[in-house]
Amino acid sequence: MTAVGIEVKKMAELLKSGAAMLSETCPECGTPLFRKGSETFCPKCNKPVVIIRSAEQESRLMVDRILEDSEQTLLAKIREVNAAMKIEKDPEKLLAYGNALVTWLSAIEKIRRLRQSVEPM
Image (tube, rainbow, N blue to C red; front, side):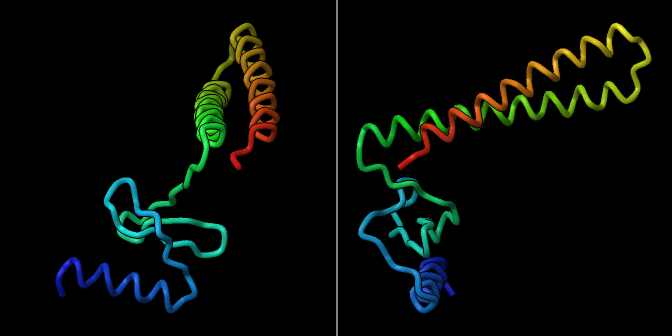
């Protein structure tokens, strides 16, 4: 079966399963987007897609993504410091690690509050 045939078959299966084909197309590949429940996705790219209808919506989405990326960076740093603390014996270094953890955890808490206040529409 050709690649196009496989895509058509996948779209047909989505329709049979109750998904709705939308008039919008994927910005990556041009394939019609589908919605099942509250999720909008491209069946070809197999990725979720967010449909932005206003500049405000786009701005909120960008802020949310930046905050999410910042949170992930902080969580990665916390994992690194946690691993270092397990083997560290020097009390001064342990204190510095602890202070860094307190600061980063506070930053994560603020990021999560911000993300709740600017949730994408």
